[in-house]
Amino acid sequence: MMKEELETANRPDNTAFTQQRLPAWQPMLSAGIVIPGFVLIGLAFIGIGVALFIASQNITVLERDYTGVETVSDCYKCSNPSVKNCTCKLDFSLSNLFEGPVFFYYGLSNYFQSQRAYGASKDEYQLSGDLDYFKTPNSACSPYQYDANNNPIVPCGSLANSMFNDTFKLYQMVNGTKKLVPFDGKGIAWWTDYNIKYRNPSVTPLKNAFNGTVKPPFWSKPAYELDTSDPSNNGFVNQDFLVWMRRAALPDFRKLYRRITEGDYASGLPAGNYSLEIAYNYPVLSFGGRKKVVFSNVSWMGGKNQFLGIAYLVVGSLCVVMSMVMLIVYAKFKFPEDDK
Image (tube, rainbow, N blue to C red; front, side, top):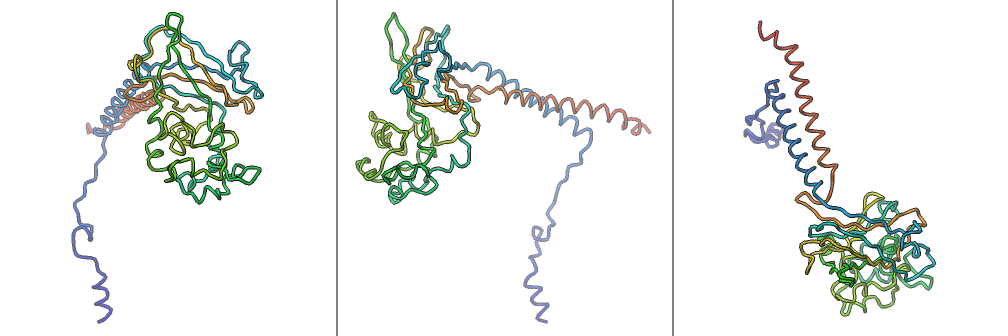
């Protein structure tokens, strides 16, 4: 009796859902459904591919290498690591309007930001503003955990220490005079990095939070002085710092440096001559790397990316070809049987 009551108590309710009596529909795939389906999918993919490819082709991109390997380059004088505080220039001309908004990137090649130990060399608690980890950084930051005098490094780790530190100023040459092109550096980092992942300590002034600590060895200034023109753009929420800390997946990458969206250049860069002044600080020749600057605009699909459009075209074409193959096979092996 007890056994029957126990089985009744554990028995699922007698409903269509628990007893799996819900109505179900299973498609019956036939040639009349599959072949037109492949054709429609193929045509849709081809249409999207054409739109993506045309949009990509309409995006303007200007790239210039400034590593300084070539002796004719003005940056050649700065490529020697022993040369400090070196400035070089990169001149270029535009024959037509470079439509805006214009995005200005710096690019590095043969630089493996995705290397596991390099990416792990940081202190997440320190970067979230926890003052306890200002005094005792995580051991993962080694060898950039403490300096030679056993002072804690903030921010610690290889990733922060290797932050890109070349700076740029763009001038338009107008009647023999240089006209500064304004850069906009606000909002260039990921929203989640700025608002969630990284935090400054709740200490005012921010400088006091860094008492008893030292800056990373490769940095020329401490974190609380990264942007002297904007007090809110300092510390761990500095836009350039956040962009650098968002690691690239591939060894050849580019990162957003500034936007050109203001004043006389809101609609883009007019045709004419330009000079880019570069404060050359970041060494790359020791590991066979290269440096470049990239000017680009965007479309509704984002930046220039021909691969996406080509991928859609290839897949769409394969679907159409497969539909034709299936139609031939169906006509050859099924039609005679249907006539009987």
